[in-house]
Length: 258
Image 1 (cartoon, rainbow, N blue to C red):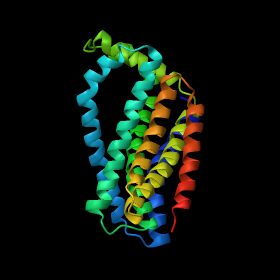
Image 2: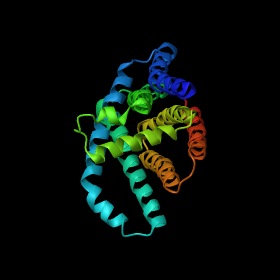
Image 3: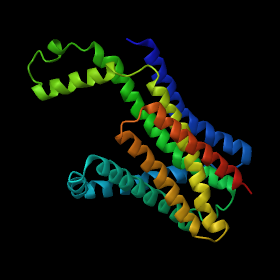
Image 4: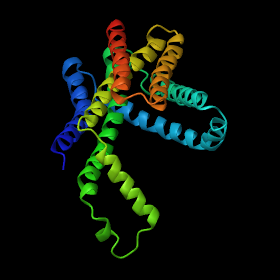
């Protein structure tokens, strides 16, 4: 068992789960903002993702048929653009409708931060739960005896091959890989804070152009990450690009403070 890998997974889980909770706690103590805004952010994010995933499921077959007809480069770029644009549309329109119809009194910078913390925080929390299951697999699968596991012959050959493939994937994990995932959660929460404040400007400045800006920014970030992954860029390079977007997001957060 790789002790360093286990420790990295534990640290990643702590970051994924504790960071959003600590952020909400900090905002409550610092600005005396209601935690209910974070709760609304979390609930609406979940609702938006249900709609988003449902829509992706509906268009999966026709989109796949279209993409498979294209050369690889065009396929990767179109797929990245499609996924990025849909993410931007669903999430930013969801934020906009939230401010317009649900949290109509939330019009300050600190209230936008709290809502964004809940929106990005629940995503980070969910990722942390998934990482827990990944850690269980890392601990259990490498020590699994395939002959003993299939002593009764109930597992099919396909299932055995899937287990072997999973064991090989675990062997290929670098000890520091989970830490990149944890860093991505930090960067992504910062991005969600910035996007929330951008959408909020639609109501503070009474200019709907900010909704378009948020959609484009979100779409660009997601499309870029998906495209780089499709073209085989290494995880450190991809996370480096996401880090740059987090720096831009921090600048946006500071500039929109009033």
